[in-house]
Amino acid sequence: MTLPLRRVLSVAGVLVLVLAVGVVAFLRTRDDAVRVSAVFPTTIGVYEGSDVRVLGVKVGTVDSITPTGTTVTVRMSLDPGTRVAADSSAVAIAPSLVSDRYVQLTPARRGAATIASGTTIPVSRTATPVELDQMYAALKDLGTALGPDGANRQGSLSRLLTTSARNLDGNGADLGQAVTELGKAAATLDGSQSDLFGTVSNLQGFNDTLVKNDQGVATLNDRLAQVSTTLAQDKADYAAAVQQLGQALALVETFVRDNRASIKGGVDGLQRTAATLAAQKAALEKISATVPTDLQNFLDAYDPSTGTLNSRGDLNEIGVWGQGAAAAAAPPTFLPSVTGATGGTR
Image 1: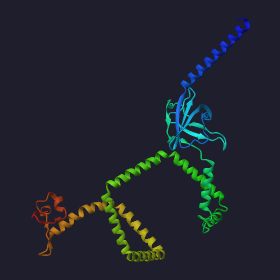
Image 2: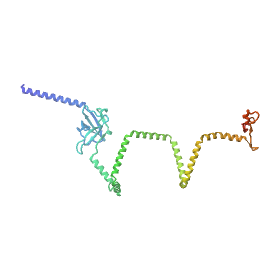
Image 3: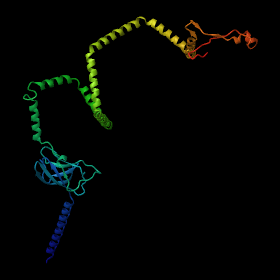
């Protein structure tokens, strides 16, 4: 064997070995790939070999597309090590109107459970873009519905547009401010969602309470209905009473206006009287405490048969039994002898 032939065979052997290693590596890579299926309503523009992307970065390819009844199953292979969330959705993306589409897996989240090989994404988590002919058909239907053969048959739409233009003319700033305030209100509600949900929960509890007390609520409604009926029947009398009350208030206002000085003087005098009574509070309290007893004693001492008051003189204080000259010189003291209902003497 000549040297050139031997060299050629050596080079060929090396090439075969490299090719074999490449094939083995490719097959091993294919075996390590994550295979995922997704069920789409349609797959227009998606073909075998189309890209599978996450955040616009290619992470795999479409292996096959199989129609299954009213849906289409797309089988995909993701590159080894690709981490996609287990609850990811699959969306067919159209970069432009005429280019091929690719499958986007979304959302991309870190830390979430990763999708396992063999997982099928249901049709509820897939979406396809609206086709251009569908958009044209929808616009055509809208134009027909709003055109002269539809809502504008009697010119209603034209009048609506004319009136709206007239009312909105010059109010652009106010309308923009209203939209801005509406956005702020929406942001406030978004920041207070816990309070809003709490309010809804409380309303739910209130509603449950009303349901549990349905009979009582019905009774209350019946009574309120009766009251409303009574008020409706006597509304003429109530109206007359209110009218008379208004007239009376007008007379009172006139009286107060005409006699303001006299009323002020009376109020000032009443204030002085009140001050005097306040200063004699202790004496008035003592009188209030003793007057009932004094009146009862007076009634007990009165003899209605003779029309006199029963009394007795304390002769010991002015007689020979008096205690010394001071007692004899003292003026006589007469104490009433009161005979009560019990027959005792006071």
